[in-house]
Length: 256
Image 1 (cartoon, helix red, strand yellow):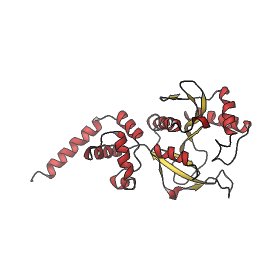
Image 2 (tube, one colour):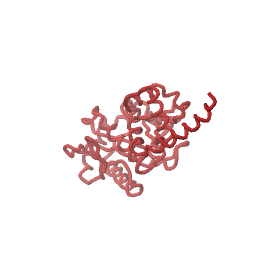
Image 3 (cartoon, helix red, strand yellow):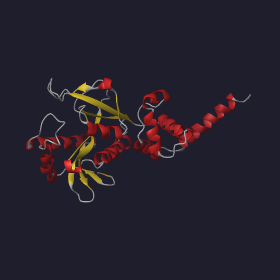
Image 4 (cartoon, one colour):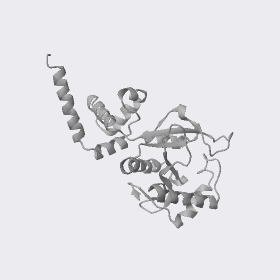
């Protein structure tokens, strides 16, 4: 189970099935999917989530409001059931689907951030991906808020959708665990440019996104990812590295 300020992500229960089936039969919720789901198809998808959880220890999870225990949909990470060139195997995707009355409140982003922490800190996954059709701007905004990056060259045709279907083309977003060196570079950038908060760091690094690679940072730096890295990595790693840099600098400038 995962808990955030407003959400509880938990294992599926039989009482969730009717509400989930109602969502999957709602054309507004399924607007960016190729079809609606019958009750049998909706229940079968939950059974697959449960099977994946039993195998991997993570999957798309039933999501409810902490305050009322009201079921609102699903959020989670799950092993992909098809292969894409260039992705690690097994590739893990992050996804969300919540009912209409819960839209526009930041709930998908809140739950997804907690799932990324789970992916990187508990399961030590090297990368998490997300994908949707190009027109699904609400979900794409969530992906971008999470610090995920899209490379248009990696857009793909979903092999599960018939050729020629208008929803076959998908955009792919990625996020990788912040490596120790990337964390150091991000914090050094923050110190040298007088950034005052993680939000400030995220905004400034995001503004120079195309240049991050040349700085030695391989992906976008989300403040949630940086916060997790700062909390879970021993600060003495950087203290020791600083001493190495100082000794090197002393040798280089000994004659100045």
